[in-house]
Amino acid sequence: MYFQYRKTKNTITLLLTYAFLILFGMFMIYPLLWVVSAAFKSNDEIFKSLSLIPQKIVTDAFIKGWYGTGQYTFGRFFINNFILVVPVVFFTIISSTLVAYGFARFNFPLKKLFFVILISTLMLPDSVNLIPRYILFNAFGWVDSYKPFIIPSMFASTPFFVFMMIQFMRGLPREIEEAAIIDGCNSLQILLRVTGPLCKTAMISMGIFQFIWTWNDFLGPLIYINSVEKYTIALGLRMCVDSAAAIAWNQIMAMTVIAMLPCIIIFFAAQKYFVEGIATSGIKG
Amino acid sequence: MTASLKRKDLVGLLYVLPWLVGFLVFKLYPFVMSLVYSFCDYSMLKPPRFVGLYNFIYMFTKDELFPKALFNTLKYVIITVPLKISFALFVAIILNMKLRGINLFRTVYYLPSIFGGSVAISILWRFLFMKEGIVNKFLSLFGIEGINWLGDPKIAMFSVSLLAVWQFGSSMVLFLARLKEIPSELYEAALVDGASRLKMFAKITLPMISPIMFFNLVMQTINAFQEFTGPYIITGGGPVNSTYLLSMLIYDNAFKYFRMGYAAALSWVQFVIILIFTAFIFRSSTYWTYYEYDEGRF
Image (cartoon, rainbow over all chains, first blue to last red; front, side, top):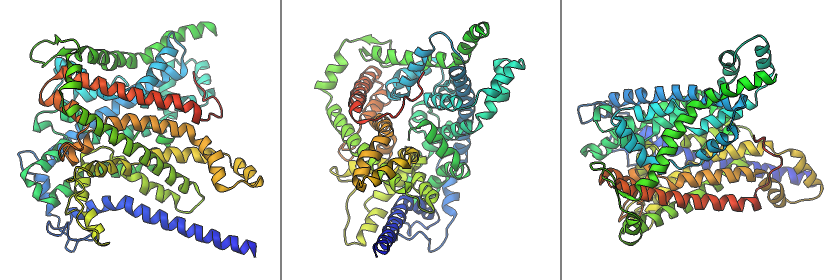
């Protein structure tokens, strides 16, 4: 009797839990599905119903939105974003791995102090450096170029990634590296042939996060990029919303979807790296 | 052995060098200069002119937007951080139950977080919460009519904050990873002793996840204080400056009016406030975080 009671109670709890998970999940995901469906709706239909299925599928929002209002198309902004993001991701992975290797595998003078500094910069708010950095980069002549993003990435400037990589390397077995030392490899050879390949997972996680953050960044391009020719997606979208065409809801929706697309593709293609990346490092977001 | 270690010393330094240079040039130098500029009048057209405490005096006595922006920022932090972390923990605990399809739910709950503070997601938020938007459409099904989510100064901040709350994914994944590490023996032992569920949560779960709670609290607080894109795109700081944050005041002063000195002073005040908050969390954490073992520090 007692057990039967417990069992039904458990079934009810289970059902309630699932009901909650599904209902809550719908609230979470609905806005994203809605923007996708709105991009395919005609302009009059967008705010008429909550339905996610367009009455009539219209694709001209994508075409009209793409060509936009000015002399530059969204294609241009899209390519610009890649020109900005790809080198940043590439250099971040290389520089962060090199630095993490130094911290994780060697002893050198002031190492403790450097590590404390690294951890402190993890919590240093970027905004306090915003203005002097702009003044500095302006003096370098980097304003209105992608250099303010790309060059710092060559110097392992995101402490999160360095820290994440150090943690990852510390977890690796050292036997193979030691064997390589005996075989007469120098430290760079060991990094390239042994440690590096073992860190592939962490490198991919790092690359994904850096891609998504840089792709979505708005304040940086807003400050440093002036000419429309060099606009990133974020700036292009803002311009599109501010312009008179703002009445063409479905075009804005379509361009919003396009802006989000690369992140969505990466997320679904590399889901496990996301979870591992967050779990091993405690990344922000 | 000793010889090889000694040789290694300098090699290690070589690997760390890029970071060291980056730290000095892109972090330490700007950090110091930020403080220097905050005592200057600097428009970038003429060299900086030392004005002593003028910027700070102006900030606290003359600039009407500063108290407003400070108050709004505190409001934003106080709404978003606790809500975001509670949601993250609550959902993580549910997802930690041994259910089927957990990966799917985890994906769904995490997905909004990948867009972070992007323009795209902020535009979406604007469309959801505008007067003729989808949220009101949904509420009208229940007979609730026309809330002016973004146009009413009393609720605009709340509507904007919800965007950050919606993106609780990263905190959730962190909690979840920690929850999975709690040895089940602890719960089994408590069950034998006849502990209630609530008691197990308070005496086992909470202490075990407290280090993650601490980490989330610190990071989310630091980030929330610097929020910019969401309110900037969704409301532009309005209506009647009710969502105007410190970060926007800094941006406007620096890049609209080119008052670099004053903007630097503002950013230093913002920095000190963040420091006070984090110091408070750090101090208090000795009372509420529990460390099972020393986490392999250097």
